[in-house]
Length: 436
Image (cartoon, rainbow, N blue to C red; front, top):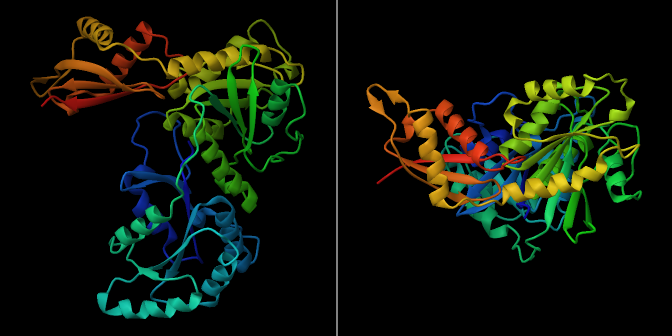
């Protein structure tokens, strides 16, 4: 189920990004030691009182070639359309400005909850000054100091109170997958080819698809799917339209809603640096991944073309070593008939549960092959392992000291688990816990 979305809007230099970082906390930083994984700062996951939500910093949207007010309007309109809750941030030191009133007038048109956050209120004696902001007509102002963390708890309480209640029930057997990739790699054409009908507009002009589009369908074997098409993602520095940046946000939400992500590459253009970053979004989110190389029919090939292209993918996407690769053509439908079975296989791997007794046999065999490491005279001891979750498969290993389970040995254990069980297409997580 997709997380609710909270968007932060306001004129420049009021502290939107500081509030974003304060709410996101350490979640905005990627601590995984794998190459090519990154994330745009405009998107993060927040959590308060055991409730999670997607957080969008519209301060990341800049259009330097357009007037100042147009930038503010674009931010507010994106928030109105995409968010479930909107934070309107103003500057407590500067007082009410024309730009603040302009944003408020735009937000009047939405039926979304709007929380008025007065930032930079560091001095308790100046809290009376916030009452000037009642004139914006957005209800009670919340004084905060994002730099020092003062008042952010009250804002988070207000966010949680206004988050939508999720009453929707889903078919637990449905497989949800999305197609992601840079503009013009052929995602929409692939969807049309898979469905056998012109369900989505396809065009050779980069960036034609603006929104995420859901399509339900059932295969001949009765398996139900939800397919999510997303707009192409561009590198941040090359995005000049608010709608393009908005498409990145929609794509991130599509990944969040998906079980499996089809990472689409353009065979004509080869692998670009940002392809790796886009795939990193899905990897970091723990989604199943299939690498789909489209437009394969356009290349002049010899007997080593496919082998060399696959080797290049494995070299460039080292953190996706578990992901299967398929070379297809949306135009000729080459190999597209294999995609549904690949998706079902990845789904089965995502949902696989390993009995604890079998898992521990594999772990003990791994330790016998490669003894646990030592650090300053202390040796890692592994007592017990158990699987605690699926999507992605997650294993907790109880040890004497968590810090003794080095990244390299954790990767070794992951490889041994993958050798013993079929986890193709899905990342797996290993968590060390000290035995009490």
